[in-house]
Amino acid sequence: MVQKIIDVAGSSPTSFAKAAENAVATAAETVRNLKWARVAEFEIELDGKKVKTYRATLRIYFDVER
Image 1 (cartoon, rainbow, N blue to C red):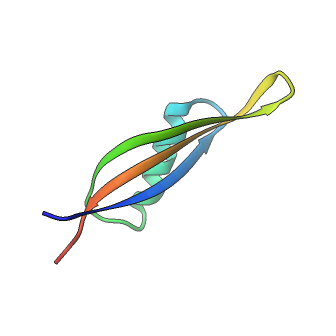
Image 2: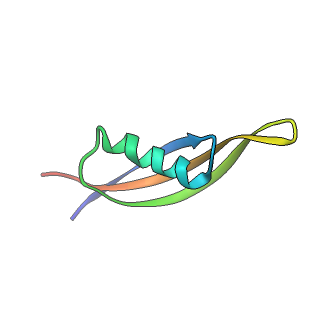
């Protein structure tokens, strides 16, 4: 088995979990055989003292088709 790895960033106004779900869902629209994902980074966009947007950067692993 050979796998390829891509980095994908997702965002959400509600949570890091939703940001990660958005990243996976969007990647799945164009990439087949997604197998694993590892959170590489969390970031928060701020608006003064308030959290405006949560962002999660994921490394997504998928099988290379032969």
